[in-house]
Length: 307
Image 1 (cartoon, rainbow, N blue to C red):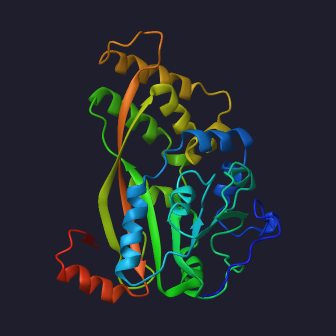
Image 2: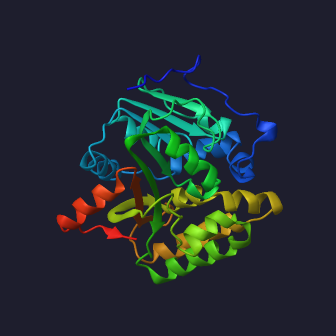
């Protein structure tokens, strides 16, 4: 097994010329502000251990090991890199935003790097057990990225792509308000974002077919205030705010949701009401050993969806 070499500064290693970055420009431009990165670290919902457990089962079913993982588009690291680090011996988180990387936690078995997900030149061939892409596949140049994935994965390595899909809120009026706000951001969403969240398209698989797991559901209770702050971290809102800096849209959204949800609660009107949110996690898994995994799952009567 090839040993991974750490960067001279394992906290922050600049791997790309930011002036000539060929990755989609949205991640660079809309995830670089310090306040935005801090809000991202605090309010973005974190993937539960169930997601990593699903990946681990898939890897082990294929005879793979849990040594090295790379988390592409890791953001501040809290959402997906940290859960991976609890299982894998060594994890590298890669994100194109320097400010996001500055918000990452210090972990003994994790290195964070600034760089493009399509450029994994710092990794040796056949050295990675899992390449993870959490809520970031829409930012990548897939043909170029998949070539790198194919190069760095071990013969029994796994590509894991996953993201959250919010389910309808039980309060119909609140759901209508959320949908109205979401729809109003449509023209400010990047095309890749629209494909996954608006049109519910599944990203193309590099080879063969994905194993599509939809068994993980996240239930999260938060205040309306925190939900609004979560909404403010979305790239579409950052683009909207740049176009209309004097807008009161987010404030109006918060007040409308608060008013609607106060009807359903006995909470003091001076406090931000709570809301329960549910997110279905789409997990796409693929391995060099895919044919054997598919055969084993079909023989065992797996409940997974084969897309």
